[in-house]
Length: 75
Image (tube, rainbow, N blue to C red; front, side):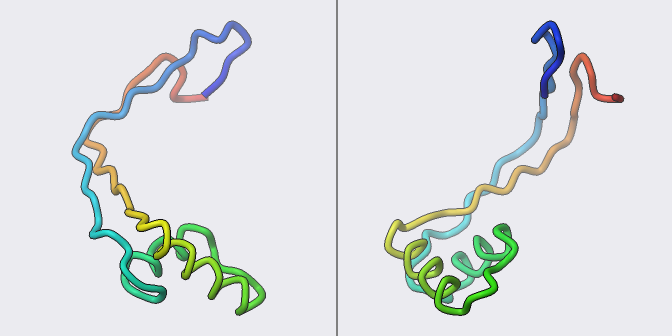
C-alpha cells in the first residue's frame, strides 16, 4: 500500500501453511510455483523454471487470512 503521506497500512491476520520442499521439476510444489508465475510462452523457459525451483528447494507459503484491516482499505 502507499499514500501521499506514507502513513497508510494494512494488516492481514491468519494462519500460514508451508508446502513440502520442491524435490524435482514437475512435482506438485514446482507446478504450484509455476501457476503463480502465470506460465511461460516458451516450453524451454518453463522447464528451466521448474528445474531451478527444485534446485533451490523452494516452498510455497499459503496465507489463510481471517482478518484484514488498516487505514486505507476502501480506496
